[in-house]
Length: 175
Image (cartoon, rainbow, N blue to C red):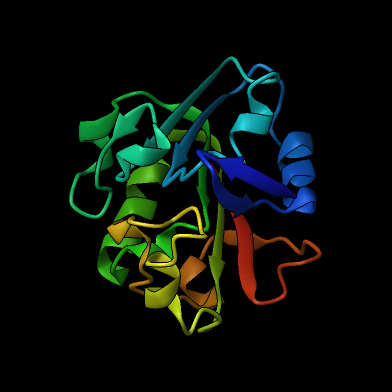
């Protein structure tokens, strides 16, 4: 689905939105890490009791502005959440910081971490995309891809197949 965020284009995947709506139990709490323009947590607002969004880029107006590559999760929030979303985000951290954040999220999640990341270099023009004023990420220095991931990086996660994400890993970690 196409979105306009402050005049910039952004795209969400309807199948992923539907998966989240049917997976997240009504009344639950959600922590959306690297939320960007909140394309996946906003559709959950009606069914959740609380959603907390975190992003390093203040332009997208997250609840908390924090660089998740350098700030430990427990310094951002000490709360435990039913679900932690890490959607199209972990690749923006260096690998060691991403692995560390996954471990930190496990300690603050009571039900499920849901994660999505590209599995191969599908964005070969990433630097150009970040500087393209037609895209929502214009001016977001945090939007560069810093790491590539493989399914083996997600030991303990269960892979999920969703149409439209052939080049991505989508999975969840059951707490």
